[in-house]
Image 1 (tube, rainbow, N blue to C red):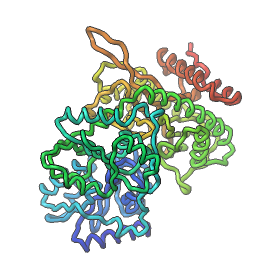
Image 2: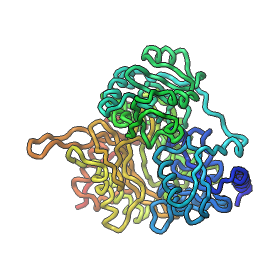
Image 3: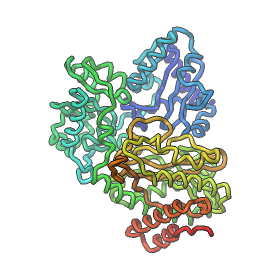
Length: 597
């Protein structure tokens, strides 16, 4: 057990004993249920050493465990080694869920404590029901962070800024009217908005409070008569203040939201998203409540024409940056002088050559050889592998531009690919292509398309455990709903204007990982009287696949044409952005594949 983590655990357990607490549940989120919280809220990371975006820690007086999903199994195993935490793999048969584990390790009448600000209404309710069924007591106002985390980072204080309509494509008044129409249709009077990406979209504001996601920490309340933004005053510049005044938005202090909600009239009906509103905020509301998904989520997911065109342009600039990155990589890797971190550093430098670049959309996943099998691997100074002139390199990266958000994964060979690597790469590519060319009726859900991407792997007894596709925001979160493409049932259908990733993969622990990812725009397809209307996808991402890893004999004529057509589009769209040497490189990478006789 590391001395540092041991001391953190011991300090927490001492506080638990002082407060007669038998177990503490610590999520990896914030009061807004963010996937990526600011450093101020990373108490789970501080206690356990685990840094993945998905994971919940539980600490008792003599044990500690952490639950995470398949994306982080290998990462968690490494980071939790000698930490005092056991890893529990979510979704794996035979592994206990958190409730089962608590029931097994606590005596009757045990006190389970949480910070209610960090738990959604739904999660807190589930935990309360569990406690009632097992004779436990739930305490929702246990706040150990400041008392056992002496160097806790402060809340971010950087100013917000206006996301101009030139890029957003719609002003605040129009958005407010559309959202309030949905609120009225639900029989409610008002809406509490707690998710940071929803607030950023709704008010055409952006910030730098959360790494990789340009949001500002705030709450919002809207009704037919009021538009209130709860935000720290030091984030309000003159420009932002005027922008909000022009939109008839009142500004209140961030910490005043609970007091404001307590004074809502009893007859008012307010919409609360039970998955995004915290238990603490929910308990502060004494008026009538309608529990439903925030209407902002579905409205925000459908991109307008300005946003769509912005995505297309951002993909062109991003593709050109990746051309320069990959040229450098191919030239430098064989020298043995760069490592995985150097690739990320160079990638940021290339993307930053665009005036519209505002940072990466997530931490680059750059996994060489066996590190590629760690789905969300994050290289550190200690773990970073030095690249050589052979082996597979998986690079999953993305950028935030004022006019769009990118997310792309390419797996490339640095030399001497093996037959197994080529075979697996081609299987993954076949699934990736199948989803990209899918045509499907209006109303289709992601779960109905998911098998298309998995079938080539399934046919050989292979699979991957993560989802195939997630929504992507516009200069916002790299992950957004309400739609998804995965094995889990998600009732939200794909609609024209939504964007999803297409990213099947295969991961051989200790050897290599392969993933291929493009972003797809859902667009209207054929319309028929007898069979209804259909949808299909437009591929947005622009960068070639690695032809050196494609076994042409495994591709159907349709798949071969699909690859060649895609490469022709990539070459045409990126040519205006490239210097002669870069264009020569890309032309070779996009050379048509020829069928085998």
